[in-house]
Length: 183
Image 1 (cartoon, rainbow, N blue to C red):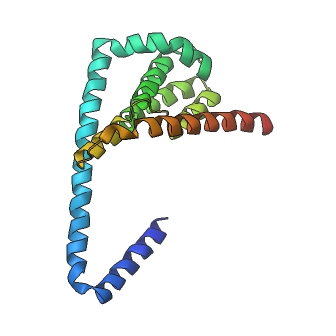
Image 2 (cartoon, rainbow, N blue to C red):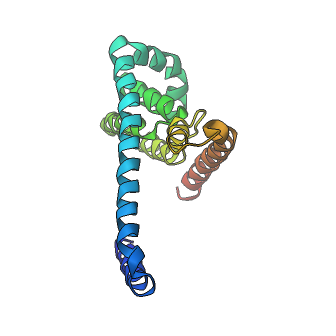
Image 3 (cartoon, rainbow, N blue to C red):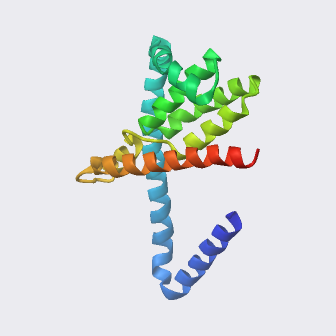
């Protein structure tokens, strides 16, 4: 994939150099500026949410959420490991809030705990759910839209909820069917 992207990029630069050489450098610099601005915006969004996640963890709120979600995570992921359930609950709650970047550390911790239990089913199911991630509130996308000056940044709410719910349900069903077929 990197090779294909590199070829397309080089070909585009060559074509632009011959068709509009006066626009080549401004285009490259504008793209770099936009990329840096986007990276800084994402960094700020994730810094805020990771800080809030850390506060929730230190205040015991994450343990409370994990305790409330424990019956759900225990049933869905078929695990009784408290550490795994807490990290699964935090991962799911971050994903529900549209914080995929903040959810990742919890997924890694949950996978490590599930590996100790040799719970392959839960590891794979967590991967499937994270890849599709139901988002009740797509905060990252809303924040990005707002930072770009969108007049109605939150209009993405309903389409995002529908799409992520459908994709997650389909992915989980396909995973469960695949397990039965390939056994």
